[in-house]
Image (cartoon, rainbow, N blue to C red; front, side, top):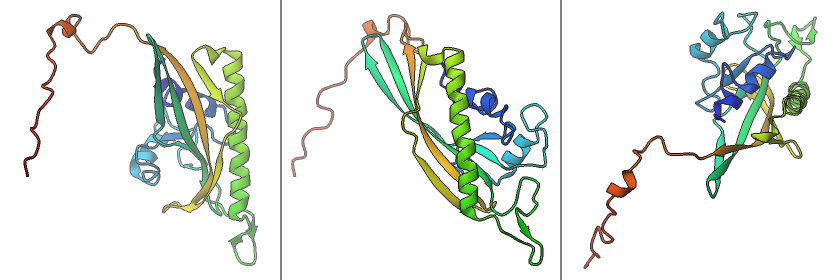
Length: 209
């Protein structure tokens, strides 16, 4: 299984599930810069793309952001599995909704009565429903044969008023084990091992000083 099957920005499983979310409406971004690219023109242009973007191109939030995943390869005989650790952030604008209207506006002052901890609670609910949707997809389409998601314990952390976009929400950590079969090598010629020279055991002699 190609690892992009899970998290690809345009065609991956996470994206396809979030496309069915009433709240997220497919707003999903893979952040190569650990969230620092959230308020750049590159993200804006993607969201407004007619093929891969969203139905309301002026709306940027709420959005799910996938940070660069970490992984561990476990090798046994001619097979190996890889365990991925994903960090997904469910984010919304603080005090404003997706259409830049004040949340729970206090008419006399024009200020928002929607506290940051309300955003934590709202985005946590969306994250939990995403996990349930992922679980249902895994069960219905029998994906456990090549990917197993650990739903037993999912850490959640809260994020407040982040970057220039002033966003808040929650981040979840998700562990996914994927199975792969290691067949013949494709990056090496068939007889490469027969024409291989080991390096010298002593490359740099002992320092005499």
